Each structure stands twice: as structure tokens, then as C-alpha cells.
Length: 393
Image (cartoon, rainbow, N blue to C red; front, top):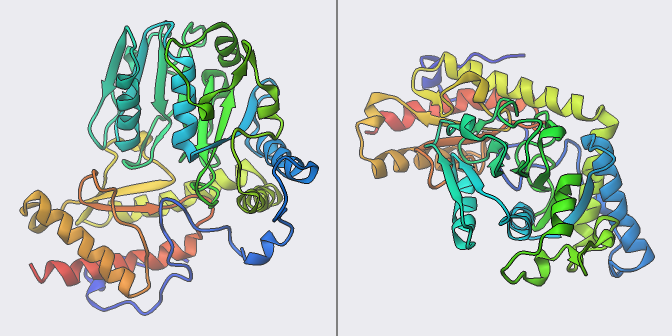
């Protein structure tokens, strides 16, 4: 049942709170109904190299392929250092033999620019845009390698599709999809490397990354040796051949089998609910509710300027009321933080502030693990908190 959320009604303090106040963008909330009992079968105290440990990790890989509908000829590995580690493994191992484009429109894309600039690349081109916009992706012609994010985690701006990537490309595409997978359709034929972490759309624990390699990426790994030294945790080949064991449950360093059990629980839950269709549908419905509230709420706006580029996972909001925009940058940030603190103190919403480098506002997680009923209860509180704080200006 939708709950009315206009600013006139928001003068009265709401009485009904979300059942779960966790709207963090990562680590995100656990699946509905999760308890510690879900981890009772974890291979605790066992080596990740034991038959049991390797079987658990292989089960993560196999279920990932099943639920995400990864093509059979793509390889999947569990790697160190979350999504960041997975992206850096790909960049440092694969880039160099041809020109490189890095597309960025938010904080993490900008981090990949920094990585690319650290590498002695002969031909680096940056495609960049401010928060709320996509860069000129049409400039990518396919003869170069491309590093890009599918969904801008800190800006709420996503690519609407992969039409800008030529099917007959010669270069590799390296896609940071950490806040896209399990919520948005991935066009696997346009992606040669895909990375993400368990802590985003699956509510997993931090520190583990997923690295998915297509055949063209494997061919590059086996035919090209970077001119720079590779740290141990980046190495995917041995004597010029792919380390196949890495994609069968062996790992470069010691993973947490407790975290692996937690991710297995999430994957099994998603599969039992209907798989990707279920997760995509939940995220779409959740985001649409927030977008509809934004449309009828004059003090707030979607940070993503174009409708078809709006994220259905991390919905990023900016405050546009003139009483707030008249403040300097620090004042606007302090105003937004005061709302985050107020609703945190009320135990209505936790950890939903905008990313530190984003415009003043909020980031509300809306993926398939969030209950629509909690979002319906949240928005009246947002209106109330805004009215409460703006009157104090």
C-alpha cells in the first residue's frame, strides 16, 4: 500500500517506521529473513585448500554462473580485495598492447582513471562527466580497450544499454558492474571482463571480489605479458597459460569460508525466489516508487539527469530547495548530513547519506533485497525531516 508523501503532510511527525532501517549502499542489508543460522553449515576451522573448503568455493562459482546466467565459456573466480581488487587485477594484467579509454562519471570510475594513469600506457584517453551525467561513450570505436562502470555506484547514473560497444570490437571491455549485477541486465557479448563484490546487491560481507573473464580476455592473458611487475594477488597465469585452478575454487590468497557460506545463502535464496527476473523486478519496483516520490516532491531531485540513465539500485538524490541551494557547498553538505543524523537517531534510516564527493543529498539503496513496504514508510519521514531542518535555517 502506497503512503502519501507530500510536504504539507510532513509537518506532522510520522508514526510508522520502516521495519528494517538499513538503506546502506554497501555493505547492503541481508536478504529478507536472514539470521545467523544461515551460516551454520560454514566450513569453519577448515583449510580453503581442503576438499570441503574447495567444494564450498566451487559451489559459489557454480551458483554464480547459474543465477547470473553467465555464458558457459566465461570463467569465474573469487579474488582478493573486493570489486576494487578485481578491477585492478584486470587492468594491470590486460592493459597495454593497444590504446585505452577509461570512462568515468563518479568516484569509482575516477579511481580507475588514477590506476590507468599509474600504468605506463602509451595511449590513454579519458572520457569523463560530472555527477548526474554520462560521458561521451559514443566516442568509443571498438579498436581500443575500454574500462567503464555499468552502474555509477556513487552517482546513481547507469548505462542504459551496451549499444555503444561494437560487436566486432578489437579491443577488450573491462566492466566494473558491482552495483549492477543482480539488478540490471548485463549484455555478456559486449563484456570481456566483469567484476563485482558480494557486499552490494547480494548483501554479502566485504573483502571478496568476483572476476569473470570472457574468451577474448583469456586470449589476451595468454598472449600478452605486461612490461611492469605484477604483485602476487594480480597473477592469473603461469608459464604463459591461464591458471585454471583459480576458476575452479582455488584462490590466490586465503578467503573467508564464513563469508563464502553467507554468499551461498544469498545465491540460494535468489534462485529459490525466481532468480534474476525476481531480483530485477524488485529493484525496478523499488526504484520506481522512489522516482514517483521525487516527481511529486519539490525539495528533492534525482541526481541522474536522464530518465533512462537512472540507477535502480543506488538511487542518488540531490536537494534542490532554494533555501538550501542558497547555502555554500559546506552548508548544503551539513544540511543533508543533519537529515541523515536525525533519521538515524530516530532509527528510521541508517547510512543513506550521499557519497562524500557527490553533491549534497542522499543515496537510498533500492535493490532486490529491500522491501518496498520499507521504502513506502521511509519517504514520509524524509519529508518530515526536511521540513524540520529547513525551518531552522
